[in-house]
Image (cartoon, rainbow, N blue to C red):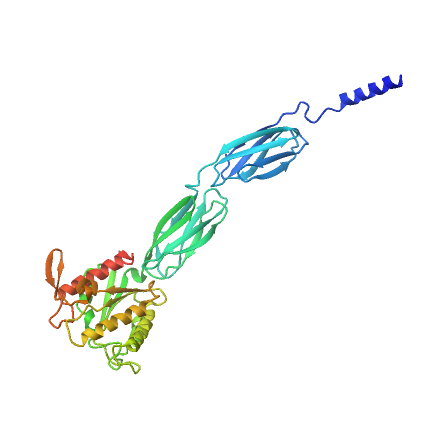
Length: 397
């Protein structure tokens, strides 16, 4: 009788305490209806923990549902590198999977730049993440006449346009780019010169004459050219004109572009060194470099310094190469502000003097009778080269 009573008691216990999986089901569904996020719809036994694994990140989360059906909003964020998202839920000995495909990152970012701003005031491109999550990107700016400058940025969360600021010290068109591994955006912003017109200073010795007249005639309405030629002067003869002081006076008028052509009257001894050895070249380069920096005004202006084409003869054949070598040395490392324009490549290639060159299938005379200066045709060609350079560098339209 005792054995029969014990067996009956155990049977009653088994009937009143069901196993954890008795009658239990597990299912999982996913959607990407909310921008930036994946939501899961979970059907599982209430009060028992469920482990959910994100196969894209190999991360797991454990949740304990309070009812048989629950929605896990913003369970995961969209990812650029994994558009197909698969999730696995486990509870007890049961498992269920769900899969959803999220949008591409090809149109995730937006960048908007103003059509134009005033130069030297600073500028910004406005950007946003359409997903609202925020992400790192590479932001590049190529100012007019300068090398491209890039930096890593963090696009903030939220879907509001936010500014990415950069300096715009000189007039011209700025090329902007915003890049991620999945998207590349480009835009352009133009910095307007003060007063609405580009200010060009054409200066130097007698070599700049005639060229300056053609620049005035051809620059158009978008530029104003001021000529400041000083005949018979040079960097090596400050007794006639101190070009260091003159450059400071000229820069005080804030030109946007300086076109300099000088050197035909140089060759005088400097700092105890006669022309045209290494010491003389070094001193000439020092003086020219100081002027280049003054003209550039900390990046606000672009300097185009013209090299001397080979002369026909005389002492010029020794002086001109020394001046050109010094100018190349002076401009080294200043490429963002100074462009050396080698007229020898056009008028005297290989360093060999020519009275005439071929232009458009015709042979035209380009030098004056002294074998040093350019004539009107040569000056015209040079002015066109200067203007083409400014347009190619996006300084002049």
